[in-house]
Amino acid sequence: MILFLRNKQNRTIAEVECFVKTEDNRKFVELHASVDIDQYSRFLIKSINFDKPEITRNIIADFSEIDELRGWLWEKYQKTEPEEYNNIIKILQKRFKEIANKYDLHYVED
Image (cartoon, rainbow, N blue to C red; front, side, top):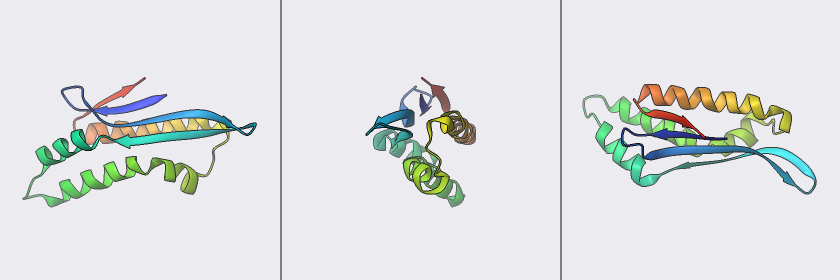
């Protein structure tokens, strides 16, 4: 499954793909996360409010979190058995929806 955060013009700012991978006869959940630097930068610039710098700090923190989701999976969550796939998807969906609502972005699944 792929989860997207998109702007009003339907351009992808961030995405995460989560899937079950087989390697050396072992199955495990893997994910790839990416933040499109061009779209993210445009979004960040439009969102800057010099009277409220915490907004900019929050955006940077939230999108840094997306960029580091693979590390979260392997270092913090640490449950990569295929049986955990649905739980991981639910966690990712919840977080992406929170970020979409927070910044008036579109949440899309594929």
